Image 1: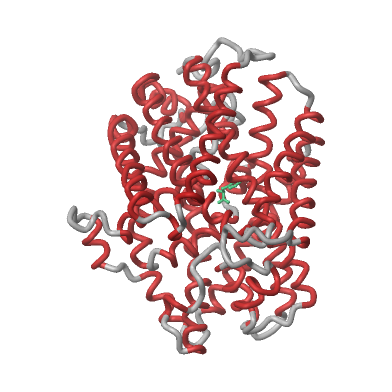
Image 2 (image 1 turned 135 degrees about the vertical axis):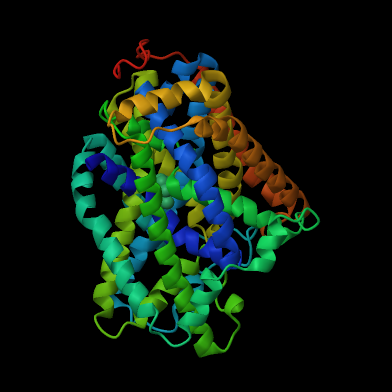
Length: 508
Ligand code: PHE
């Protein structure tokens, strides 16, 4: 139970409540849900089983686990830790800082129809484009420093237990608030139109997904990679977190059941958050007369317009709901961010033998400094680009390599036998050869294909219509930098060499 709460706490985060709705909206709602569910069932869940099994079997963080498979593969583990920390975490904490600001506003804000202009104009004062860097947005920097202080403090003190205890209240609280918002938002005039767009499969687009002639249209290209990378992001796959957390599971553990519970609860959070956002969009379209796909800009700011609108439409206790909503959202974000922080910190401690104190200070300072780029008036453009490039090329490529290393080098069958043995119970339906085939053939083929499609898309329709002079150095350059850092870590020796013996537990 404790393990599940921690893993669910790490998986459920801004990815479900902030990212999922805008990616779905950008891709047309009902057109998005179908590839999302396909990606979840055929790739997300099998990989979740793989990552849990890997951590359970090799008892260590991703770099440790992969170095035990072979020293050559250690770089893959480091790369996961690096691009998640040096990429995703840096902007993710900026979004938590936006939430902190909204928590502060909740005390004084008159919730109402101005949410739209409030976010972009009054709060972030967004500049005219990514090249117009603009000045520093101080409230964001202040929030960011608080977030990194919390991250660092928790790692420094090693008090993740407090956080685990608090998640027992905050995770259900977040679920409850979202449920209230779901019920209420569905009563708003026009909301049903919005939800229809979200839940009703768009058969024209779905038919096009399988039509080679249409494959290279921008909409279809983006659907596949957006659906896959959102599944990875939301389940924290390819982050190295799941591997690290699974190393704490007891020897007898039903990994398949754990994987299913995490995947299902994570998806429920995302789908419910989507209902609130789309119902609100429907309502806003009803009020303004604008068509549904034009009501709000489909970008990283969507959540900060839609939820305040939804809260503003509540019949009573608006400030209370506002405060509770943003408090639990911040909490969900922090439980995710400390899981990344912990994974990076413990990997560095094992590798270089540094003290916990030193690592906590270095990582917080580095994370905070990196986040400053996203705290400028142009920050949201940069955030959007890095988020897209790092998720589609980082997470998907990491998942692809992981499946190849386990499937072909280590052999999926060996990991499967371990997972089945660990379950132990008689009622357990063991994983079959089908899983081996998914890992060795299906995942490499599908993810390889999606990554190629994404390359084609970036060449044909550069992300956000940006120029290559921006996407190249910033997006691709950022990604390349993480590879270099990972190679550097890989090239150093272990101060505390990972123990040699493998699979030291489970015997029949
Ligand atoms: N699954 C997490 C989420 O949805 C992903 C994440 C974890 C992102 C940690 C950043 C840091 O929010």
